[in-house]
Amino acid sequence: MSELKDLIHYVSKSLVDMPDAVEVNEIVGEQTTVIELKVDKTDLGKVIGKQGRTARALRTILNAASTKLKKRSVLEIIE
Image 1 (cartoon, rainbow, N blue to C red):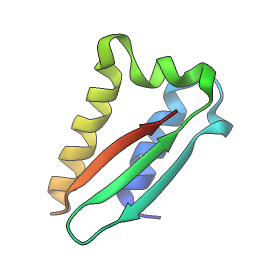
Image 2 (cartoon, rainbow, N blue to C red):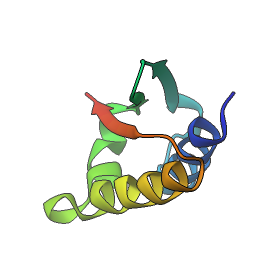
Image 3 (cartoon, rainbow, N blue to C red):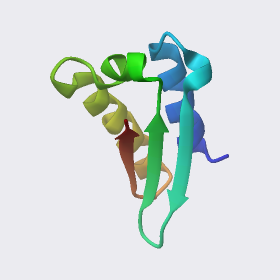
């Protein structure tokens, strides 16, 4: 597991009511790494937040961490 995947997994599990349903997949491309986050349908609102604020915050954390690791990454929340 990479550091970025672990980070998103840890933060997401802390946000939701059903932490066992949290799945994080990492797709490594040539230039960009895609982190896919899948949570239970009932927890989708918690991960996205009001007007997408929580999702934006997750992406900001991911950007900061990936910049430190000199990588480029994108977070996708899968319904």
